[in-house]
Image 1 (cartoon, rainbow, N blue to C red):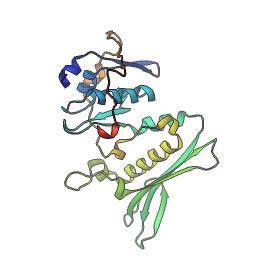
Image 2: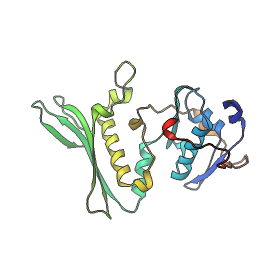
Image 3: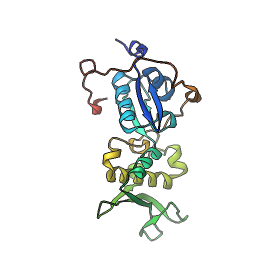
Image 4: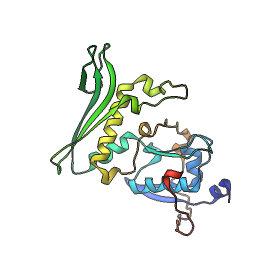
Length: 235
């Protein structure tokens, strides 16, 4: 069965987020969430919807993205930074966070600074974050090198967001990494676009009028005999 025939099957995955019922079919994901004309596969659809269902993510509020640039490349599943922060804050053990950037001054001295303020004579080299839990004696600290994390185009130039606001971007990467390590029970498997070296797609305006409540479509029945085991590293 080819991709088009698979997408025609009206499989639906249903779950609730904050009292709102979310319905995702292969066609809805393909038409409104992928952001390109590249065709998703059924294993990619299943991995995406299972993550959304288990982690209570609403892709129509841009909490999760299924990004695919080409039919010859596997899809990337990423989540929004706000979705990660929201889940951490809602954890009863969350006890705050500090974050900022790492710069070198004109003398080559390394300075770790709170926030993203940088003087003209300083060079941005990284970001850092520290997360606290009420039930842990020690905090979780994460530092990230700008050279390691920065996203670049094919010509080697930084992508638009990294070119315009590199300090904000590198601090965000450090925050996400520290939060995921501190709250692995809530954030395992949730990676942000900056960590996966992909750019978020522009979701279509039509997503705002997708009917999520009236039309009844048979629930998805993912039986193991119908879905072959998928190694996410091979997608």
